[in-house]
Image 1 (cartoon, rainbow, N blue to C red):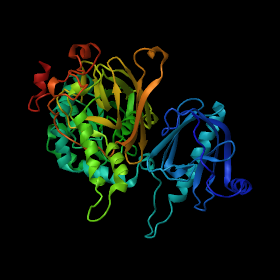
Image 2: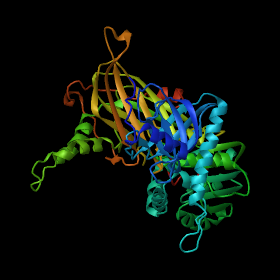
Image 3: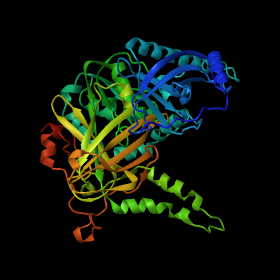
Image 4: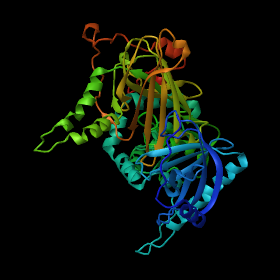
Length: 558
């Protein structure tokens, strides 16, 4: 189905629009092909032209304008709020905050476009022109005298992609001891890091280590315990001062640790590192976008054949059935069905409230038996991936239902691998494993799907990074035809949702008791799915061994 074309942005005549473009557009390219716009699922490729120049609305902004061949607007993108990345010889990814659609309506979420140009040379020219005009716009705002006589310096790479308000809140949060304590008291997390370091002393002994986002400095102290020659603990928040106090309070280790206050994108170090260690994981692995800083640290500071702790991450996904959770979320919007709330009819806002509650991913610990099929996983290799790979994560979904039930959405969790030379150790947040402060995450669809045992479930999980240090989540699940005629393919039902990873619904700290068979709603069944520990071990999956915080390193060597 072709995408419906929006009307022109203004009632101006075609001649007037073309005159505006001649006066304001400086450079353009014809016949590029959109491969898959991030906010449109299952839409055929669109052929368009691209122009870079001054917006004709009088604002003076430099924009990237995508036009249909008949000059109607496909999309306008403000260069100040956009970034362009090269994915292949002639393929580019454009990530934008607050793009405008062809009707002139502003979107409040992050948008990504992947498009293909006709040749590698044309792609190179387009990329260079984009960067040139973006720098021009940035230079107009940077380096100018302020009212008090000071100078506003050019922004760093971090500042260019992250909103100042988001960064301020983020560093304020992690600058407080109570939040560091919450992470330190996650003994699955902290104990696994301790074990991974101590079991792989050969990787740390006599080596230079960089702790990326050091926080309290606990990982730096672990590295020093393992015999590191020197540790550079880089921390951008006010927690750096507390880390210095902690390091000074442990002088036998602290003499080999230097705490550096600053962003990893900006600081300079006197030598290359043999090992990077960090805890960059957020909800769904990628939330808070610290993985990008971890990859940047690799490119800036890690020497040849260096080690990364952790070195690999996996996002695991499976459809789930949880009638109680679905009803709980749906019932939240019932407040807005009141027709006489202090003589005010609230019902005009009911639909918006209903969709709003389903736009929140649910963070809690759930029973693995709610899963409807075995999970699939998406790997992120921190040792090889590019920073740009984290801006737009597109994961195709394909499952086979184990039971007949209602599918309420997609359950997700993650694990990371510490690929040491001596011991390979996993840290997992899987359902059924000891609970961590990350819990698990579920994307609940407003419209459930009905499936039968053996029926194929397909879809797409699309994560688009935005400047508030998080991701917009686009989820689509479809139930394919089942039974007689299924070999002919076709989709029986489809349900989609758009969620905001930055604003989850924190629900429970422990999994709810799982209902026995006679308590299940119709078409529910037990057990739905449970991972086989022996199979996970054979496949290199996580084996969780919580480590006692009072246990010393000598015990681990025995």
